Amino acid sequence: MPFADLGLSDELLQAVTDAGYSEPTPIQAAAIPSVLMMRDLIGIAQTGTGKTAAFVLPMIDILAHGRSRARMPRSLILEPTRELAAQVAENFEKYGAGHKLSMALLIGGVSMGDQIKALEKGVDVLIATPGRLMDLFQRGNILLTGCSMLVIDEADRMLDMGFIPDIEEICTKLPKQRQTLLFSATMPPPIKKLADKFLDNPKTIEVARPASTNINITQWVVPVPAQSFEKRKRLRQLLGQDEVRTAIIFCNRKTTVRELNKSLKQHGFRSGEIHGDMEQPQRLAELDLFKRGDINILVASDVAARGLDIKGVSHVFNFDAPWHPDDYVHRIGRTGRGGATGVAFTFVAPDDAENIENIEKLTGQSIARLELPAVEEEPRRGRRDRPRRASSDEAVADAAEPVAPRRERSAPREQAPRDRAPREQALQERAPREQDRPVRSRRDDRSYARDRDDGPDIGWNGPIPAFLHATIPL
Ligand code: AMP
Image 1 (cartoon, protein in one colour):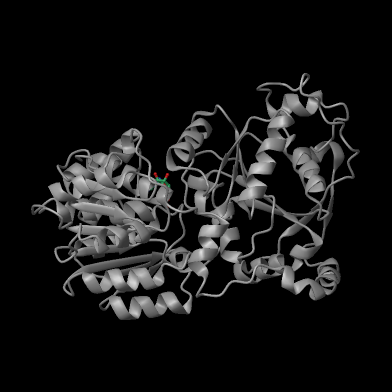
Image 2 (cartoon, rainbow, N blue to C red):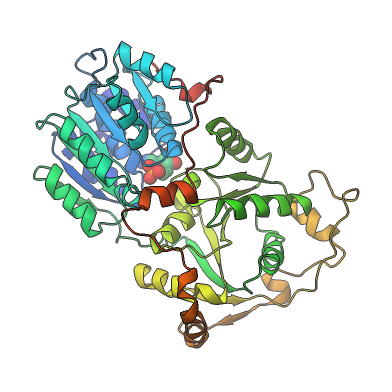
């Protein structure tokens, strides 16, 4: 189906042509006509499916008529993280160039004063994370009674981060007569309940099986010893493969992100880091380096990297197997985007066997094992002979004990995907140490999320990067 059949205005058809899209993605084809007809909608879709444009495009056309009033946004988009909120704002800028809509971004890490000023002027589109929105609401800076359109994006992630009570409260502040769109990669019972309570006769669109993984991504589970230095050694082995052009490496903890990035740099890799302890400008600066190719490896934590749309990531590494299976789907979804192919390696230490089982259960696929050949200890480089900005290939070639990670060179032993014996054994070894696992109850979800990744909102009074300007005329 061509874009022209979806009911969008000529300006928007021009905008999608300018964006280089030849036809709508399945979620766009199914969602856009319904949204334009003002229906409530549940979109079960992962990032990477084009779901952002599925709501941004019709919203622009709907909001093109009408005027904004001070402190009364006309529409609200809730996003779980600052980065996702900023990305949605970028989408409005991209597709809304031909419209005169105003937009405000309410996210932590950006000066509240500017955000309040933007609200005072009146905005057509308010994009917010629930925490910052609630703060401003409680200070009396926002009235949601004029908000006739609500988008709850990445709802399952909101649940993971403990935002559902905030979202419920926000929903009660909006007028009952409104259009509500909810997007989620999966529909766990609390999200289903939320949808039942706040959506009116929604149309449900499912573009991919919940939590399914992209067929363009080749996935490997790599058994590794538990010790960090051993894992780092295996990682360098794989990073040395010449087909690793750009990589995002996920760790479960902020401290691991920092340590790993430091270690990679010491080994001459061009790497950077992104995690919740960093202030917003730092995160954006690091992302920019990665997007521009000044660094080709980004070590990341889940919350900071959620939903990032960075083109051309060739590899994803799970340095730590994710604790939650849906994080796996989101992490590896950073590669294999827009029809490109990608590779995802997940390190699995003996204690991680259960996590991998849960992932395989969720995705309905078993992941092939890749046994790496044993590596000799690499001598650490002294400070003086450390390369400054060597490429990863150079770095490995430079090492006194170069490893032979390329599959064609060293043909690692692949185990049959169905071979569960090592996992069972690992599970048995693991059982008495159950208390080591991070235990998370729904009650302390928020503190868990903050502690684990998305640090407290730190007010930032410096210059606002171009696309984060509090109000951007579209
Ligand atoms: P999203 O699922 O919203 O994160 O979008 C993933 C990527 O798909 C983004 O890079 C979009 O620019 C791109 N995209 C969105 N719609 C289309 C389309 N109709 N054709 C090709 N790419 C698209």
